[in-house]
Each structure stands twice: as structure tokens, then as C-alpha cells.
Image (cartoon, rainbow, N blue to C red; front, side):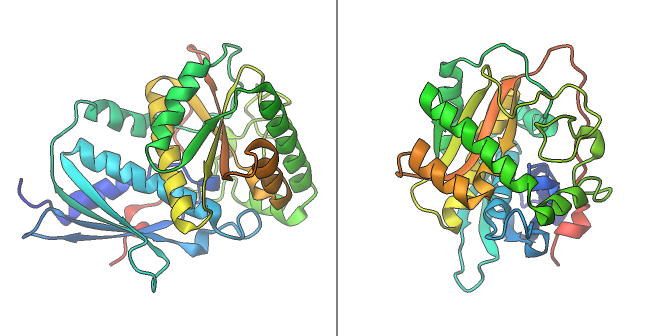
Length: 322
């Protein structure tokens, strides 16, 4: 296969930028380089610390999860275009903002290429109420296995006691955040933040279940999680930058699989944003063996329900480094 052009590598970055990110902050930057001798080229992923949420994410954990999701989207997009991605994560200890260097070489187009690209194009965070159809435990195990292949533990919360405890901790986290005026203001600022980022107010649900102030979407319940929802807890053995990056890759993998299977995924970040409830989640739900990184709920949307619009994305010129 001949070497790809810089514009084609930039187009792959555009695919990667469809990844989910906390508050749609899109906290990433990229550099592409064409190599006409050894392979099609290289893509580097950088953290953009100017887009870290100071109140909700003081340690940058969710920034790294977001960038990990973008990294996985890049890998999936590259594979769908016949490119094999060799990833060197955190390749330079002197440059912690350089999160990954991806070397691309010719490969085979997988039979799932069209479905994979369709999942990236249609994936959305749909915070509307799920149907009452329960998500089978076998389906949760399947999604958990898909995510776990990316280097993070993905734990289905099917045990009633652990599930109940996680629900209580999520409610406690929401109460703590509701009393934090600085955090509430930060959340407000990222609703209709701009034409290229942030959460459009038209996608914000009304009711107490939203982490944002009530929006126009009318059918959110009063609870974050219903009994029929599936719940997955993403966690890691260690709790450093690499583990957080891999958790983002795991999130992307299970989310794209869920999208292909017509399931919706909604991250429940609050419980890991509050240190008190994150510690309790680790010891009371994970028995102290793993560090919780993210809780997500899984469910079915009504078949006849209208499709939500995609959230906006930054222009490539804004995220590509020279």
C-alpha cells in the first residue's frame, strides 16, 4: 500500500475526534507525520490541559479517559481503512502531555469495517429514559469482555447488594456536587459553551437525574439508574495515567459495541468525581481490590424515538499541531 497523505491522516484524526469526552470538552491535540519509507505515517496524541475541568476533574483523570476514548476511535478508524496501528502509550516521560504515538502500517480491512465506522458516526450520549426492558446479564458480560480486552477491568454490577450500594453512592455524590457552587457554575458554562464544543442545551434532560440544570428533554426520570438498567463499573489495578488512558480505550470499545447492538450508554461520572464516594466505591463495591474509574449505565431506547443530533466538534485546524 502506498504512503497515505497528510490530509488522509488528518481525516483519521477527524474520526478519532468523534469520541466521547467529559462535558464534550474534547481535551486533545494531535500531530500527524507522513513517512514515505517505512510506512504510511505516524499520529501523536497530546493532552490539552487548557480544557481540563478545574472543579470536576482536578487530577485530570477524566481528561485522560476522554483522550483514551479518542485513541481507541483512532485505532478503529485506522483499521477500517486498512491500516494497522502500533501504539506506544506515554512514550516520553519528559513530555507527560504526549499520551500516545501511533505508527501506522498497511494491514487488512476487517469484515466489521463498515459497521465499526457506522458505530463511530452514530454513537451518542442519550440521557433520555431507557425502556423498562431489562438488559440481560449475558449482554452485560459480553460488553464487559469487549472493554476488558483494552486493558481495564469492567465489572457488571448484577449482584443486588453491590448494585444497591453503588446507587446510594451515586446519589450521595450528586448531593455533594449540588452543594458545590464552583462545580455547578463550571457545569453551567459547558452547556452551550460554543458552536464547536460543550453540551447543547437541547440535549440536556429535564428532572433531577441530570448532572446539568434542567433542560428541555422531557422524559428523564427522577433517578440516575432504574432497576431495568444495566450497570458496568470500569476499574483498574493501579491508578496512574496509563491506567486512566486504557480505561478510556475500554470505554470506547464497549460503547461502540453497544451502539452496534442498539444499546445506549450513559457515563455516570459524579460518583468518581467526589473523592469520598470514589473511595467508598472502591472499598464497599470493589472490596478494595481495584480503583474505580467510571460507572456507566446501559439500556434500550424506544425504537420509535427520534434520533438525537450529534454533539458538535472542534475544527481540525484547532486540534492539529503544526
